[in-house]
Length: 284
Image (cartoon, rainbow, N blue to C red):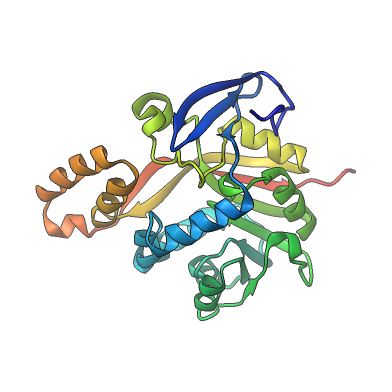
C-alpha cells in the first residue's frame, strides 16, 4: 500500500474493500480514500481510450443535449459566485460549458488533452489542446472551472497548485467531484456506488478533505455544496445499467410505467456530487 496519505501524510491506512482488482483504502486520520495500487499513466490512457470508444463513457459522449443542459445549469449556479473576466474550463471535453459561458458574455476558453474532443470544442469556442503540465496561459484567468476532473488525477495536489498559479489574485476556482461522504456510498450503496470506479476515479474526497486540499494549495473556501444535474430518465436508465446493473434493471422496470413525456423531460437530480468554490488567497 501507499506508505503515506497524499493529503495529511498519515501512515495508518485501512483497507475498505476490493473491486475490479483494486483495493480501496482510507486514511484513518483524515479519511481521504484512494486506490491501491494506483494505475500507471499508461493504464489510465488505455482505460480512457476504451471507455470513450466502447465503454461506460459512450452514452455520455453521445448525449449532446444532456451535456448542454448540465453546462447551462452549472453556469447559472456559478455566475453569482465567480469572478467575471477571463475564464478557463479545464477538461472542457467537447466545449459545451465554454459555449454557454460565451453566450453569457464571458471571455471563455477551454483546455483538454483529447484531440477529438478539442476539435469538436473549437466549433463552439476557443480551446487549447495540451496537458495541464505543458500549458502556459497568455495572461492570468479570473475564473477557472474543472468539472469532474480532480478525482481522475494521479496527483490532484500538483494539479491545484498549477491552477493557483494561473489565476489572478482573488480569482475563482470551481470544482465538481464525487462526494464520498454523500448518502449513496455511506448508507445506500456502499462499494456498489456508481462512482467507485477502479482505474477511473483514483481519489475520493468528502467536503472536509477537498476543503483541506484547497486550503493547502493556497485557496480560501467560498463554498462547498451539493451539486445537481439536469438529467432525463431516458439517459439515467442506460447509465445505471452500466455502472450498477441491478439498480439499472429496477430503474428500467419503473421507467416502463412512466409516460413517455416524463421519461424525456429533464429533472434536477442529486447523484452524490459536490461543488467546491475557492478563491486564490495570497499572503498579505
